[in-house]
Image 1 (cartoon, rainbow, N blue to C red):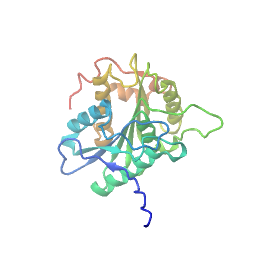
Image 2 (cartoon, rainbow, N blue to C red):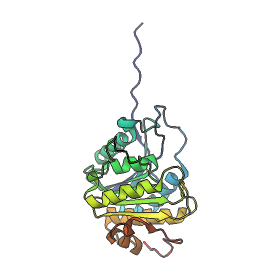
Image 3 (cartoon, rainbow, N blue to C red):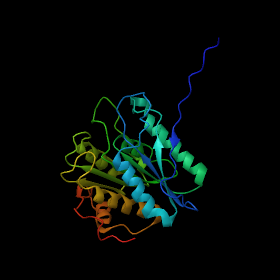
Image 4 (tube, rainbow, N blue to C red):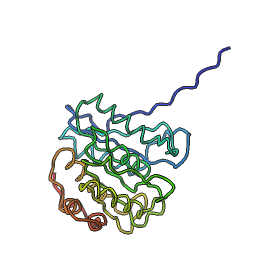
Length: 253
């Protein structure tokens, strides 16, 4: 009896969040978290609550603009060193968006490990913007190459991190942002004071910040004054911008 071949794992694009717009004029790819090392399949349960909340908020705010929002389902739970599986899956998903919708601008929105994947794949021709929330980024190590930043040239980039995050170090995302800012002026970073990894304490502000940034990047909407100031300010000011309590309450679309 012949040996049965092992099925090849493939990434997949989740169905559009909310009613699918017609026509599609822009797309967001949501990149969930994961583990540093694991070749197990991702859990079949839905992504963490922040990703779900982001999907709903972005789909609702961008519906009139023709925004399609999809979550990327990875092949593996882990980043897995040089394999960087989530980054490869994010790149595949970006190609799939181009295949489905044509030449539309794409924003990659990642959380935790997904934030690293979003930043890594930000150089794709279809991507015009990247959002990384509480991103998992490696320690500075003279023995290993630094996490690349030059692929972000010409993209608009937002990083946001809770100052009390005990899972992913906010200081490492600041150092990354400082290097990225040297290659690309369109980088800003917000600090969510007293919040932890899941950004539960200021969830509404984080959603409003992300929505404001994404609609501005994809569709040319004027961004809020804090985002405008953060993009324009030199480091470290624009990379340690506090996310004010109540952000978004006065924004109107």
